Amino acid sequence: MDNKIILKSVPISLITLASVLSFWRYSILLLFAVVCFNSVSAQNCNNTENSCSTPHEKKFTKSAISRSIKIRHKQRKTFNVNMFEGKEYYISVCGKSKLGNIQLRILSAENKLIYDNAAAGLIDFIIIKSELTQKLIIEVSAPTGNFSGKDAECIGVLVESRKTN
Image (tube, rainbow, N blue to C red; front, side, top):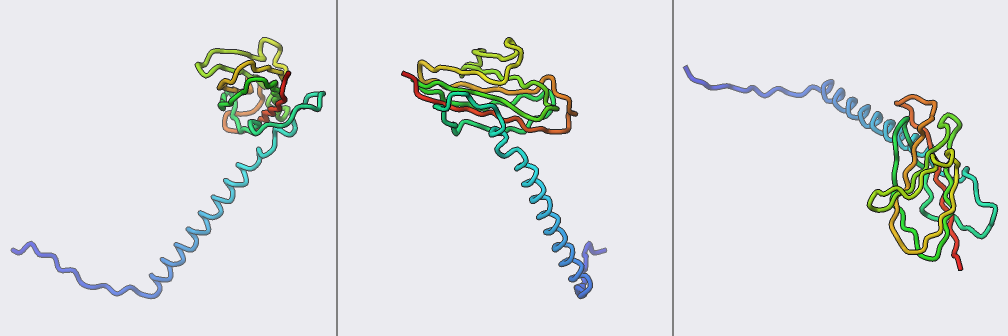
């Protein structure tokens, strides 16, 4: 016996070709819908930092360090910042009431704790004077939040700065 396989040419019918094209059309539409939905949900946090309290003194200017961050329950988010010599920084955190009080921690580049607002009753702002240029880490969380682990809420971190004498 020969171990030969004979393949016969099978013509593609127009119905099969049409169904393949239809499948791809719906797949592309579905992909487009998913991308649009993700874009819209990612934009929900835009400019949350603009709702945070600002200093009473108007000599501070909003910094590009300011962020809007999406966070889940019991999650901590960090971002790196450069603080420059001879500047004073006003840092404020805010969010929806279901977040509860927001914890703000400032760490050195070596992860040593510099400030934790938990020691001050979770107040929503701090003013820091930088005597030398340094890299720091800002960490935020919502330890008292009232939302489920799957939900994500927005936290605003407003950073304003001014030159000191």
